[in-house]
Every structure is written in C-alpha cells, then in structure tokens.
Image 1: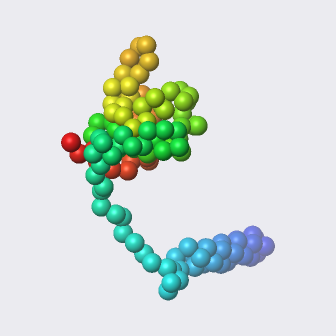
Image 2 (image 1 turned 90 degrees about the vertical axis):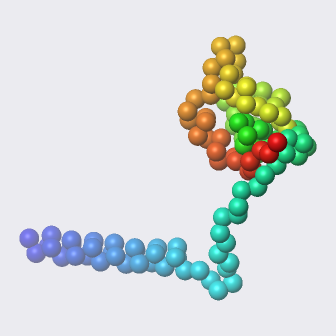
Image 3 (image 1 turned 180 degrees about the vertical axis):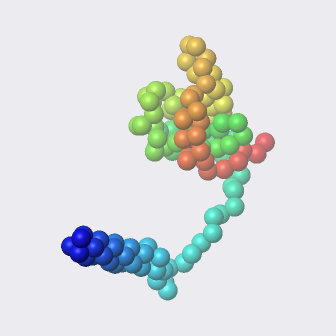
Length: 122
C-alpha cells in the first residue's frame, strides 16, 4: 500500500512539473513580440476578384464572399475542375455541382470558411 501511495505521489509531481514547464513555454510573450488583433473584414469587387484567375492565384466568389483557394487546388477532391472558376463567381457550381446538380457536402461548406479573405461588394 505504501509503494502505491509513493508511486501515485511521484506521478502527480511529475505531471505537475510537466504542466508547469509546458505552461511557461506557451504563455510567455517576449517583449519584442507584438500582439495583434484580428483585422477587420476586407471588401473586394468582382473586378478585383477577376484578377486572381489562375492556379497560382485563385480566388472564388461564393454567395457574396471571396475565398482564396490557391493552396487547396491540389487537395480538391474533384480535381483541378476548381480552376475553371478562378476569378469568377462560383456560387452556382458550388451549390449545384456535377451532372446531378448536388450541393457540396456540409463538410465542404464548412471547410471553405478557412479560405475566406473578403466580402464581395457590388
């Protein structure tokens, strides 16, 4: 019984020491580091979106929001078909894709938010 108690106390102390060490590394901010707030939403016109019209610089407009999908092109499950819509309004193809005109999955709809860059202004 005494061995179990000592072992338990030892585990607890090691855990606390590890937590303390990790906590210090994650929460310390060096005086030279700047803490910035989230930038306000940017707005783009369709004319501006249309300049991002190739595989190396691909913006899509979907339902009045603009997404930079440049780094997603190679990962797109449907292949490079996404590049046909670079610099364009992709609302219709996003919500009525393929021959069956089915919308993208809820997962895809949530994933696109990672690529949001601006609101579309008309």
